[in-house]
Length: 423
Image 1: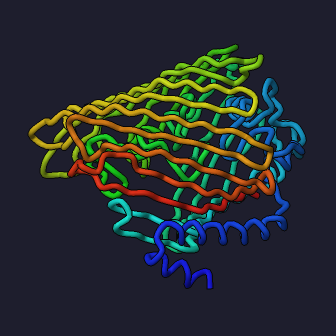
Image 2 (image 1 turned 30 degrees about the horizontal axis):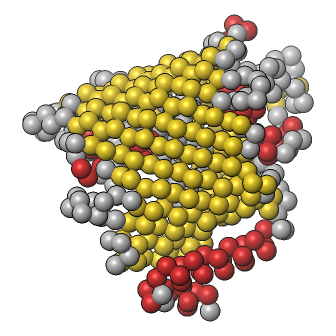
């Protein structure tokens, strides 16, 4: 009955979508009370998920310190503790302390194009299943692997890196090697978001050399915050954090498609204690080169990206504001050397009304005088219910407020009901 009603949504438009979403949401709400599992770090340290997450995957300040310290308790080097010791130089952890599972489902997704003139409804979509392998494998050595299964044919690693921490006994010297995000230490990283199914437009969707997910123009066409094969050095002391990294740029493999490299770095200041504990300001930058992926012609695009961001944490309120600037000297990777400059902004405001109810408001805007096709202007309200600390149900709307008179842009509104769980 519910499915038949949703299939006939084109007759009732927005009201039908809200009813479908509400019904599916209520069904999942009832079923959710049977869930009990927790993620691997909660099992290992006998702590609740909210110790490290406000609304998973969004981290608390304690969770950020835990991540910086190589998944060891902040201020300690406990990576060898509570493990089986075999000989004088070998310790092995229990596998359940390293392995976890994450699940994402979209019971309902509705898209309205051209101001509601055209509608598309998706029901019962299994987004992905993640095999999540992470933790301290021994003292000051960490591993982080996200293996994602999207369908019967698609398996890939979102993130895959080893970390070596507190080198020379100093928190100022840490190294990560593998497929990692260049923006992990920025106040708005684009990863571990308040709304997990909605990315930050400037970070997730604008690649170098006019690339996008469907059409990566160059051999090294990359967005700002996606995982790339890289080596990064980072450190922290008191309120200050720094990072400096170098990557091939190609996010799909570690094979170097050209002789150039991308470099990136972050400087961040945090509030380590007090009423605003965990608040921060940071600046981030990346400089790189993209080239054509062709044996017949060769064109080169020098690009750079920069961002400044601030995060205010105050009791149950979490506010992040960021500005972005990007410049490509050969946006189309051709002989015309057309430059493109874009400016973007993003805001995320999260609030815990009660421990089980979390609200978020996000705003994204991108503007460019050189390429109108990348312009973007949407507001995203979202409400989430947590029947368990490791389970969330959410209703999210993406409302397009871009002027529809622009011939380059097509108005598109979205509504999704989302279920996520980690165990």
